[in-house]
Length: 177
Image 1 (cartoon, one colour):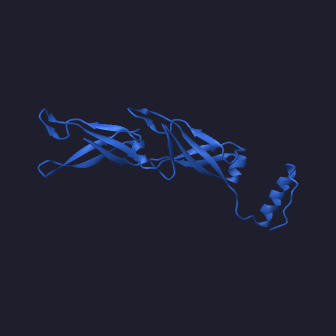
Image 2 (cartoon, rainbow, N blue to C red; image 1 turned 45 degrees about the vertical axis):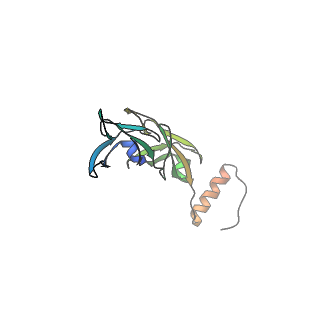
């Protein structure tokens, strides 16, 4: 028997246990606890030996075909993950650290080098998806930088920013406030 099973990216990241309800030929139902191993991907097949339909040689096997539900914050590329992080302008210019979420809810601190440009991609080694069957081995988590500009400058901030712009040779001036 083959049956589809949907799992979240967090479940594929950490592994999970599910309880399945199986209908028997006599109309009864039975419950079966199934382990979802870390690292499963779309199309992965999980074999549950001896739990399928009754045949002349005993019960057959059940195969669960995994479908990983898309995540709003992460994109999976094999064993690697991609996400987008917001970095304040000052941190992008001067350097610092920002938190990066993981699919299991942890927050990792990522060092942002001074002068990091919008669209730069930074890597967190070993924080991606686990290899199926080898959960100690992991891919990488890639974080694409989205520099967040201030939406309003007070007079002092504007004066300082204009002085900075002049100091780096930027001469175009906007007279709007």
